[in-house]
Image (tube, rainbow, N blue to C red; front, side):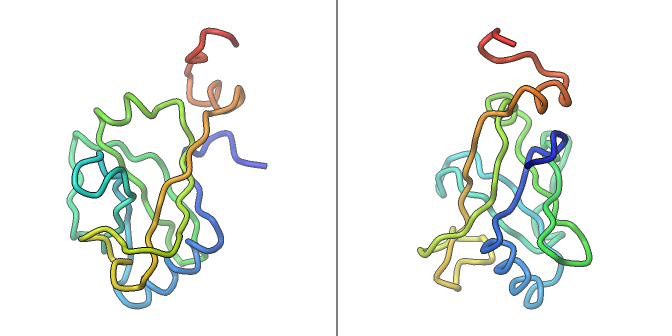
Length: 133
């Protein structure tokens, strides 16, 4: 079961990699790429290496079994297209994105998405995108 107040989650495999990367780089954060050079990859950075601002939306935090949760952001303009979705950060074999910290590991983070369910839509104050509640 998922929490009706969270827009983001993490798989156990991605959480394990995040624990390893945190041991190497310190506290981490994600910014969901807007789709340019690295597609729409979740970019993972040490906190402070990517500066968020008023044009970014905090989607929520993920619990990777660390002392502090990991914040996940997206640009406000991209959020307008994704506001009806729940995102899960996962990891698969492959080359990571250029500036994302998992790059040298032989693994890469990716996003799995699904539409928010009725309880989540209600929790976020959203009407059904199809108009059918």
